[in-house]
Image (tube, rainbow, N blue to C red):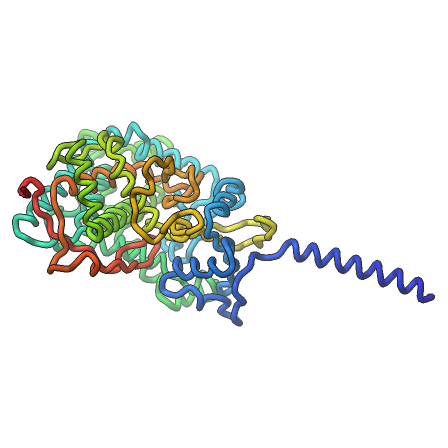
Length: 497
């Protein structure tokens, strides 16, 4: 073989190598920090992963790849990238990454949020939307929400007469929980005037907190049997408490039906009737898991949104006065807000949007999982990867939001930005087929509750705490709560000259 032949073969080899390398390069992972041996980038998460991941995005860009133990994780931190994942390529990213904790009691096998897109998921989602969250059903239950808001106002009045500080989050939670329990079971589950019955709140918050913790088992599946942090064990106990409650309520209703008692018009009655006629569509396990999802997500998210909104208003009294002026003009001073009033209160709506921008209930949208290699903006997301959408970071993205760390409701004046999944700069409830099904209820409850307590009372912080001293630290879980409960003293607004 002469030198010329060697030269040609070498040239062909070099070209082939360059071609292969170019292909490998074109199918690379998104940028990210170098992983450590074994643990990968787990050390980068910290106690508040939404903030840590937002800081990484400032270094590596809006799409970052991490190695969390054995799991490749891709984090999306911009509205444009979120649109690619949640709309343009929604089908490829529609499967949920199921945390080990939520496999307790096999909950994920019966739950709308955790089932894959399949026939059973479509059936349960249709039942949920039609019988609980449809416009007709919500309209039919409007009197329940109005009654529960009046009970909240009565509780605030009781505190004002005693000069006592009100735990805003706990009062809002009880209102939301009793609203939901009346819708589902036609009964209250807590006494709205009691300060002692907080166990159910602790159960629901514990579920959110435990499920939101970084769990070593999710990153090292080999540790599943050991459960080194005890997360699965603790959440199994909490799930068990709720399922026991639901079993008792279902058994009680079935006994009433056997005795021929008159049928109720609540959700439990509807679901049991569907289950009797079409047991292949929904059984008691599906019903209990649906109730668990509604209580875990439906109460805590609305509660945290109202508490954050009140905290921001107490920090900026001039904004509170402005919205109270709007309420007095449109509704009449001292009156409760009805759902039909919400569209006539644009500044109140701006406050709610601004609260959800800065304090989204789900800072990291429920994680997705890719079932096969997916190409995303010239990168390859490998099969089995976890995909996180950092809604908290998107809401504070300085390339879109001016002064993103400042609570400024006026930014939404004359803006068509909404929270229903059309605008990816504001996605506190997700987008697309996996958007939070409780969104319609939340958008009805928050304006009514917030508007009513603002139009009925003036508020001040307890113990002469100044607005600038109010603690605003976050407590990370699946939902984002205040680390320090908000306590404020109400005084009837009509008593003020």
